[in-house]
Each structure stands twice: as C-alpha cells, then as structure tokens.
Length: 137
Image (cartoon, rainbow, N blue to C red; front, side):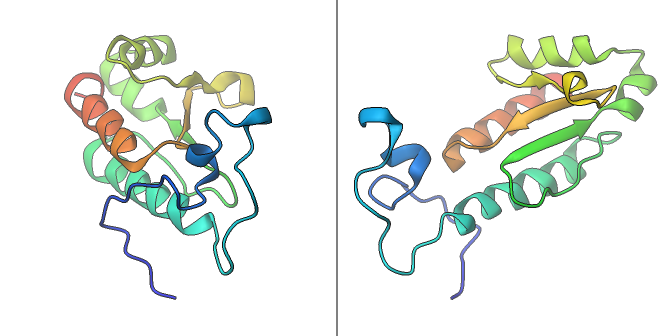
C-alpha cells in the first residue's frame, strides 16, 4: 500500500479512533475498523511532518521520531541556552499562543516539552505555525 503524506484528509468516517470516537459512549469508535485499515499511517504522516518541521524551523531544538506513540519530546536545551530561557519560558510561550503541551521534566527529561500529536493534521500544522511565528523565534 502506498501512502500520501502530503495531503490533508478529513478523518471522520475513516476509522480514525481519535476522531470517530468523539461523542461515543466510553469514547470508543462504533464497530470494528474496516478490513485492511490501520491507524498507523495517519499518525506516522503527522509524526514525519512534525519532526521535519522541527528540524527545519526550530534551530537548537532536538527531536527524535518515537517508536509506537504519537507523543514527541522536544529537547530545548540548546535553544534555551542560546537565548537565556528556561523550560517554563518555552512552555508558557506555547500556551500563550494556544499550543497545549506539557512540561517534559516529569518524564525525566530536564529541558523538554512533551507534545501530543493525536490531532487532525490541520490542527497539528496550525500549532507548528504558531510555534514558528511566536515561540521559537
């Protein structure tokens, strides 16, 4: 199967569990996924987009593609050091522009931000555009 990682898709009705489960009892999508369906291609595309965007647009921020999760850890050590910023500064700057993310220190990473990419692609792109314009400048 060939995947198109450049097109934004409407995920409603496509067995995207994070989308189709909205409003369902217990948060579960109705019925079983279609034959041959896999949730992996959708979030792999978002993960590729996110990691590539970070590498190209956020100098001093390190990220590695995770295996089997839609969570990213952005290591901001070099970025913060170059700008005399703290992880709290970065965290609050993101929240101030509507990017909901978490302090990564509770996950044993001293200068990281934990980012959840379990969103539709358009929202992932909007978040990264805001980070590029207002936070990692």
